[in-house]
Image (cartoon, rainbow, N blue to C red; front, top):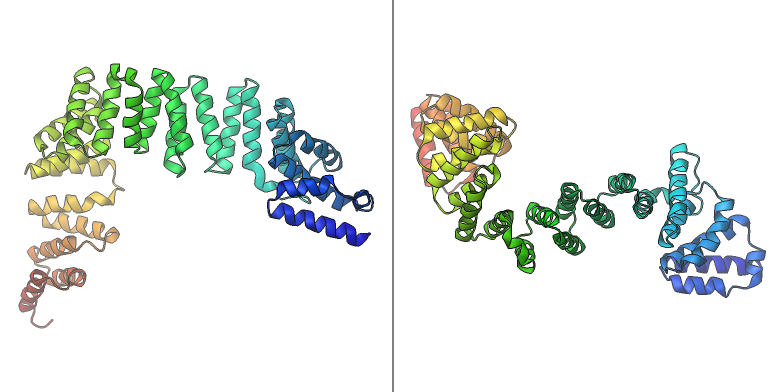
Length: 426
């Protein structure tokens, strides 16, 4: 009898591990009566748990619940059982019951008095938060539901279904900004986006939702999808803000001329939209229209003086126009606001170099090269600065660093030879 029992349980476990759930439930339903009669309590419970899971995963929820009722009596603090009870209750539409068992799951988890004899239920926290959120949403408790969905995302950052449900919940409750924020976050984080893109287009049923949809798609760089949405929903063309989003998509696809036309048209209606002015400035820069880019960046900064990136953008356009002193002043403003951005130090050092401020340039080149040691041109200019300051030894060392990065450069070799002639002993 023990052999029959052990063989049966081992086969059930193998079927479960292989995810052959229909075969497992069939095995259970056609078992010999003696198998359960002679089985120990813990082994019988393990079998019930495996079969209940198989029923649930086969969407035979009433059958799963009948086994769960027995398990819940025997193991009231078993995390795997409580998780499964929340799942099955939720899928059966028993939302009040879902709330009860999800709550009991986390009470047991927080108390450290839980059991995991039947399954690794502690790993199911994200799913349990999610079922709890669904139950609260379906019983018209949206604020509480949003909290639970957020908990699910904290437990599992790539939970697509939690993202979908939370974004849709915010949309249903007309919290469009929150819906867009969640959608943007999900589109940036998750690689499988088709469900998210479909949900985004659902938002277009309302003008506010359409704006949220397009903003989220823009934030994720989904340029083609933005144009598709605008094409499918021609009623959006009557809104001025839709022109801005279409311009963003065209710019993202490198269609600069078309984007510029739409930005100019949009800014006629919204001349103080500093973000739109910045975007037109970027497009103008790409088209080589540096004067127009400068004008747009200055207008944007008048509308929003605290806009840090604007000072950097302005400095680049001024530099292209040969206004190096103004470019330096603008970039100094940016660095004072964002001193941690070392990426601009090389550009700022170049501006100082052009103005023959070699001492200051040295400091910025050195800071830049700590983070970008493979920038050959920066090493050359650093060496030039040292040479102009009369620091021949430091100049030679910097030229050698540049030569290591470009060993075939005759120009760098000539500079090294020149320094050596000044210092024959080296």
